[in-house]
Length: 326
Length: 260
Image (cartoon, rainbow over the protein chains, first blue to last red):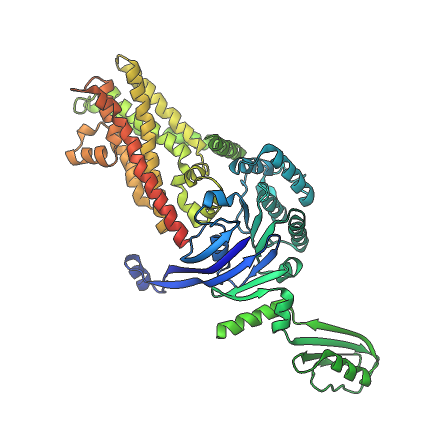
């Protein structure tokens, strides 16, 4: 479905310098430095996958999305999506994809949503029957009925995002690119948007590629993540795989019947202790969870135990740090 | 083309959300060129004629160029405001839609308020033509239509050129207004009142002279020799537009390789 092999992209960026003298100088002569936005990016995506494409700001996420949606031409490398090379057959290719830029609207600001939809129907030359069936499906799943008659500028951000996503699906694309679809949304709207992405993926088999900074989006949606940093591919695989590969720290919280004697578990560091509750941090490379539990139950009468893995956010931050050091 | 009118229709609906502002703008637009035209009138009041050109004749010159400019500003405004489109990254949106870039940029903006300017320019045109004694023939009518439509082509070409610069600079270039506004100011008078090099520049480089001065001589029967050449002079506007479109495509290619 999607094959990306050896993508390279270098930008020339004007050096910005401080100071008035430098600024004046820059008017006449500019120094450029080359920034490698993408270095040898390769991956492939099967039809019907939901892939989370993540990385810190400036990692090259948007550049990759732009290359894959036919906006940018890379310096070298292959990208084949449904048999098209996006930047070569732009017009015939983009009919098959939908793109949502979370921060920019594709709807006409001052007119009711339905007018934008109808214009998009004409832009994409969607046959009337197909348009009607898509529209009624989208209206139903996204609960848009009341929004269609309202000018876009009067919609809330969450409502608008639902309309944006619907707008990008009117022409039944096979691939949907979502660039930060939940940015700025409240918890309720986030959940609504996520649920919708799942529905559309399950019912229509749309392949979804989404970028986000919200790790709960990834946890809720993506069976697979591609992590990039400084233009390089750092990880490609399941979230679970990432966890087991990198996350060896676990936090065990134990509640027990009052016991004033301090606990001592070999191999586990105590994070907090009270007569009723204690928290330990362990490294699963050094000690197995069951050993800790066995040691615990021999010392106190356990009432409740919770074991928490490292939050995914911490994991990502740790990964970024590691790679910036190397 | 059908799609273009749909773009215009949705923009019209948007504009109608702000009725008061629309009417005020239209009125204002009506008054600006009127002031310029009044200046022209008082000039002739004082001097009678310029190099053998009477007031109504110059008024035709004036009206043709202003009509063409008003029409262009109405529908090619998307190119005029293209710098904001690039600056805000809206051009990316254009590239992910399965239509040509020119059509989409044209469809991004339509300045309805310029209708005021257009109306005023047309009024001057009718006034000027009716106060001249012209023997109208079908060919002369065609010439007049050619003059205006090819004028639109020239201004559109300049707008497109100016917009193309935005691919490199992101910001719009004020310099280009020398060509649009400056060209308009120059070409509202018959070109033979200027220095030779000015006349040549506006005939062969930016062919404003070809859409009013030369064909107007044909309409006013001032030509010597072959009138058909004078009559067909406005088509230079179409020829002017072609390299502009070419440059635009180079600009789009540059944008897609730098992504600035």
